[in-house]
Length: 175
Image 1 (cartoon, rainbow, N blue to C red):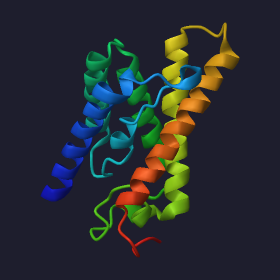
Image 2 (image 1 turned 60 degrees about the horizontal axis):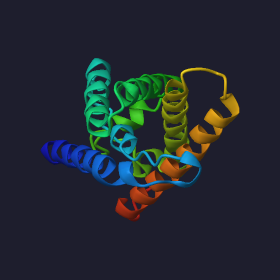
Image 3 (image 1 turned 90 degrees about the vertical axis):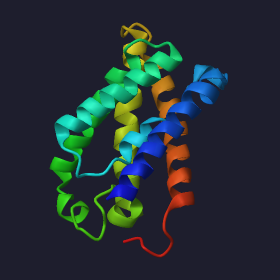
């Protein structure tokens, strides 16, 4: 349990620094944003109580907002994504798999299988990016462009997430 705690703290800190110091200053084509810090929130263990999960998402999003100069945008999007995560796992009822003591309760391919993990990650990334870009736009006036930004940035984030998880996945332990 202690190693899982420190792994998550290091992951949260590393992705926050990567987002704030590197990715925030890269100009992507078409005004896309590569937002990688949601990966840390998506990979949090299932043993975290829902209220603590929402508060952690708010605090983490708020830190990203402070570092990136986007007051409230990341905090609100992170909280929305964590709410969607809670609903996702209630609807799909995978808690029996994730609470198994051998599996350590993290939503990883080794616990959910690659198909289950890919579906979970896609829903979370889509929810986060759609909410993020709708808040950033502030209106429905340019909805097709906002949808393009959400889809493009979401795809970038999703592919980055799958690549990172694949690189660090334990080999031979997938369902």
